[in-house]
Length: 235
Image (cartoon, rainbow, N blue to C red):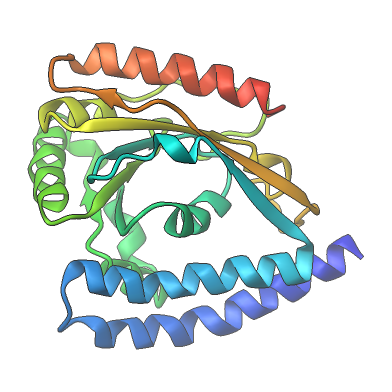
């Protein structure tokens, strides 16, 4: 049944995503926030489909820590699940990602309409400058910015170095950083189609004022909290 439920979810996702990606192209005349709100309906529908087919739901701890103004979300990355759920948990947002993702047919087209911060990772310091420039513009326009400091999905019970980009963005724009941990990898793991039923827990930490902090200090503080909280969640 686990395999069957996972296949049913995947079939629905493969069927619906190209259709919705084409519809997303017609949101171009709208503002970035309005486009984001419309396109996020895809993520909401996928979470509903996931709950229906695979019996995966979620709870959120620390909702009271979510700021009322746009900030930089620095989050654990274990699964594809959080890229969907964050669109339901937080206000309109954009993601920092490698530019190659925008080249994926259908998915990349729809993704481009959300105004992501797509960077060339091999550009080094120039990529950091571009990140701060674009991130500042996105925050000023009312969009939140999501960064996965690990850069890629990391399996539960494993750790990876936190890259400086997200902390550099928060410090460079004097924004608030919001650390987020979760245990989605226990239910929707990387490199497997199988989805295990259960309740994912998302934990939102205390916001960090980065206006007087250097990137290294931000990164160290965020990494320590996320790793400790992730371990507490059993992941």
